[in-house]
Image (tube, rainbow, N blue to C red; front, side, top):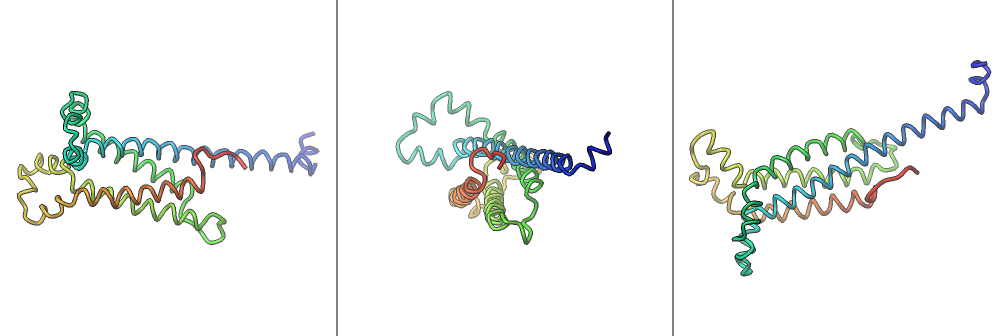
Length: 193
């Protein structure tokens, strides 16, 4: 009986359809996981930015010191380093899931061009966020914890540290480009074709 089912071409076609549907569903779920991690990254990036000295300086310049002095903001600001570590962890997961899903774009892949754009802007954004982190007060505190010296006393580090807001602008531009390419490819929530 089983042999009859397996030799029947209609049964083989149904089995092939089931296997194809399962593999597409798995790929869609992995892509969805990458998108969820991307949105978590966005929330953590906003948290890092809003608790950053660059943002505080901006609020002071436009006369909004009352926001900075509120107890709610002071509580939020206190966890700047925690937002950074959460961002770095989720970024690592996002990169692993995304590369696990799409791999490196290959010749013959109909989506290779958009995958290269997504990967390229993602790498620029990840590089920019690394530079932002290296110029951040959280890293300065961590460096001071391990060697008891403040890196700001180093003449080579001060000019780098002072351009922190410029590095943020580079990151934001790369992040927006990455988001737009990703959105144009997958939308907000991909579905089976």
